[in-house]
Length: 503
Ligand SMILES: [Zn+2]
Image 1 (cartoon, helix red, strand yellow):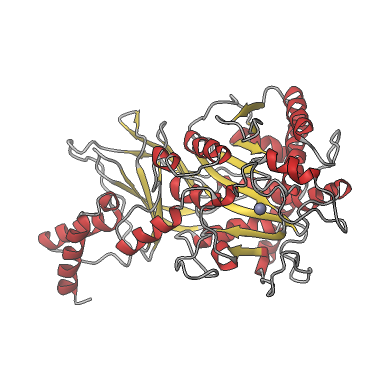
Image 2 (cartoon, helix red, strand yellow):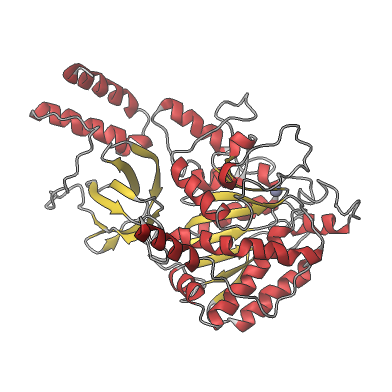
């Protein structure tokens, strides 16, 4: 017990040992001074940073700028190095995120120059992308409005210059996913192609630019940062029952997402404090209760067309939404306090991109992209019904909590492969490497499968039944998700199995 307590304490200290920022001026950063922070940072840390802009500009013609940090080859995805992102100020009048991300940018550069062990480790092992403002046009409008009783108007500048709320403007993938769930045989990841996503009516240029960005870089973990409340929000954001404005709508990774949200809220100075005063600025009659400083998005209030769920369902990226404070547009002199409240949490959350497993999918030395990585909880055998895909270079990343799992890799033209693993995550340690070498399906497989049998898997021994079991397995966890016509076969096999086993 004492040993466990000591270990926990050591881990906590490791991620709260944030140093003081030098040479950074807090206060409202308008568009030009935002660019200055990025340029100055890039000048100070040229070897480990790069500035780039997304493919399209805002309605008013501003660049959507991103700064990237990584110790080796900025500008290049390296297989095995996970990609992380923070997006701030998506609602232009929610400025705390913009300011704390600018401070974080200065912090990462200073930390690298001063060889801070945490920052150096992050940069050595991660590619970090930070977009301090996704809605610079909205910021300009909000900033131009006078304060009344210290507050800016609640909504002015929230939307883009065409009055489009960017966090309602993404393709509604949740509804599609809920439909697939009912079919028990539809896609559970990458459920929309890039061209289909871009064909959505009335996409704002900012949304379109971000969609292209999400498909061009294999992000693993991210958060989009807001203001107006103080809570870490996780998928799904849209209610399963579309008649309900509030309904807990768990994703297949609910436990993982709760952990990720807590990995922010528990390191924030006040977010998870049960005695803090709740925000009461939106005029809600009933104040929501946020135990541990986290909430399921749809339980709080249902949102359609949000960016968070689009990340999770259309790409490999797991995203949360962070609300950084009750006041959306505080006075400039308060911004340093927000940084102090958030800095340990911002850092700790970035480390979470290294939990779980990662590896290369290859066949005879050739990388296999677009392979599906499926995971089952062990020993129960219950699948986590959200797969990830390997990228163009054959690398994959699967965030997982501590525990035993069976990992199954399915790729067109290859025999499926399985591996049984135990995940034991540690702070400042890369994800466990689990590589797969696949055998082409036109060749006989020489390697045996590793033996971990989930308790749910049926114990059948005769040849015919084994065939049925394998077929059912493939229908359950194999490629059936890509072909809903197979669902009829799956149903048929399941009926036979039920009659065989009496279950
Ligand atoms: Zn917001």
